[in-house]
Image 1 (tube, rainbow, N blue to C red):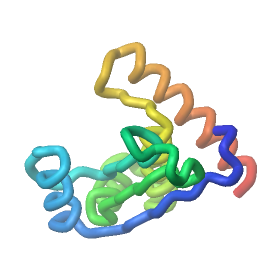
Image 2: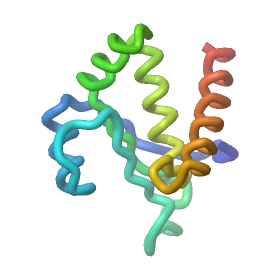
Image 3: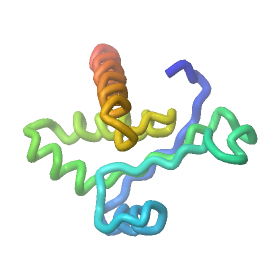
Length: 118
């Protein structure tokens, strides 16, 4: 992602906690798997350019999705971290089908890189 000094926080929560954040910040009801709060956008983005933002993952939703997909919890958790980080870099799968495809391609690329190093 060409950001070797980038910093982010990772918060692992349960479904009620992520549902609360989802409602408070996105006005969406119920739990979700991952939320991302970018810090490189907006009026104060230049204050700490190395700070990418926050990624919040629901461990309960991740576990359920892993089980339903027949993959390990570790793999699903890694997918969600990658997904959250891409949001911190401005990728948005909800903007358009083109953006969704672009984000999916980048996610696949990053997952392959991680598989090689782990």
